Length: 415
Image (cartoon, rainbow, N blue to C red; front, side):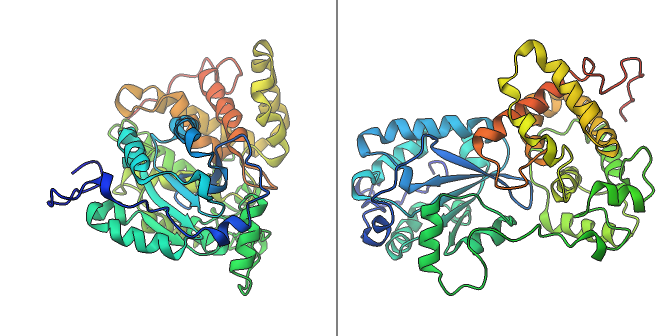
C-alpha cells in the first residue's frame, strides 16, 4: 500500500511501466482552446458545497508546457495548502488539454506521492468534468492499482448542470471556454449552462413562518422567538457546542457531519418542531450551524459590505481596527450585528481551546469566511476569499479592540 494506491503482487508491473492515462485523442478538446490564454492564477475557489466543504477548480486549459509542469503543480499546492486541513472538493475540467502540456503518468505518480497527508486524506470528492472516453478506459485499467476508498472519490461529470447539482451550487463562475464546450456537448439539456438561476431556497413568502433555514435573518427575527436577534436554532447549536467534550473536539468545524442527518434536522426545524441536540454528533451540530449561515438568502455580513471587505488587505494596517469597527458597528443591520457579535464571541471561546481542538483564529477564519460572506453576482474567486478570511481572522484576534465583545463582560463558563 502506497497512500491510496495498491501495488499489484506481480513484480513485473511497476508504475513506471503504466501507459500515460492522458495519451488521448485531444482534437475535440483542443479545438476549443487554441486561442485561449491561461490566466495567472493556477486554480479557482468555486465556493462551498452542500456540506460546507471548500471547492477548488483546476483547468487542463491552464496547464503550461511540460517543462514548466513541476513548478505549476507546486504553485497549485501552495495556493490551496491553507485550506486542505479541512475536508475539501477538487473539480478537474478536462477541456483544453493539448499535446504539449500532457503530464506523464510517472510525473503524476511522483507528484501524488509527494503530497502532504492532508491533501490525500481530506479530499472528499474528485469531480472530472467533460471526461473523454479514453480517460474512462484508462481509469478502469488503473483500478487494480488503486484502493477502493480512493476509487469512490472519483465522480465523472458530463455537464455543468450536473456539476451544479452535485455541489449544491446555483451559480458557478467559470471560464468562457468551459461554458462554450459545455454548450456544444450538452446542447439539448433543459437548464441554462451559465448558472443564471436564482437562489435555490424557496422565497420567504412561500416558507412557513417557523422556517429558519433558507430565509432572511429579518424573516426569522420577525417570525421566531429570537432573544437579542439570535435565531433559536443558532442558540441551540452554540449552547450544545460550548459544552466540555464538544468545544474541545479536535477538528471541530473542519470535519463534515453526516449530510443526511443535517438535512433531516433542517427540515424538522423549518416545520417548527422542537429539536433536541443532546445526543447529536458534534460534527453534525457544527455542520448544522455552518449550513444555517450558508443558507441565508443574504450573507450575514451582507452584499453591501462585500467590496469593502474584499479590499481589507489593501487598508493600511494602522487603519484596520478603525475601519473594521466602523463597518461592523455602523453598516451592518442591527440583527446582523447582534448575530455576528454572538458568533464571534462563541468562536473566540473555541479558539481558547485550540490546544485540544487545533482550531486557531486562522483555521476558523478559513472555515467561516465563505459562510459569513459571498458575492451576490458571481462565485467568490480565490483572490477574493483570501481577504475575506483575513478580515474574519482579524476580527477574531482583535474582538476586544473593535468592541464586538464587552471587555468587562465575565467569560461564559464552559461546561
